[in-house]
Length: 230
Image (cartoon, rainbow, N blue to C red):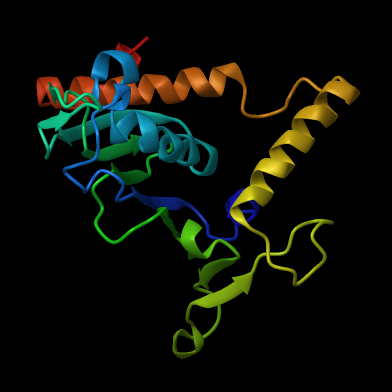
């Protein structure tokens, strides 16, 4: 997706949509843990899942300038492993509106009570000359739409994503493949003394600023300008 965007194949970016859905917290009998405590976790679905979606948004579209968000706790109490009832203070789900510095708009949401989903991460990007759709639960394929050619011949095309050198072309990759390449890139950067390897501490800092803006927007019920978050 990044290559399509960076090469200008889908034109000026208009919309970014992302939903990250798990169902691990649907069960009311799931024991309370530190993840249910905002003070120790820094957030529920927002920090556990949303931070990855935020990082994707920045990587694919660019810096985020404004945020409006709503967080929700659906199951306010859970029992810890000892049987004691504890209050849940970290969000089960959140939804947010984004505005990017380049003018694009975004919708970003994450939930730990997405009944029916295991690891559903869907990304949609629409531009002046095309669109892209990708889903982690079907990670070997990306859907591409281009406005070129007669309208009656236009349509979504499904592309099998090949990796540069491993596994061989046509061999299906898996979720763990990305982690293998991340470790490889990290070790290669050390050996070659490369300074531009991403993500950097700055990337983490920027993603954390957006997460803080989401928390603040929910509390203050208003748009939060990222310039106000340090």
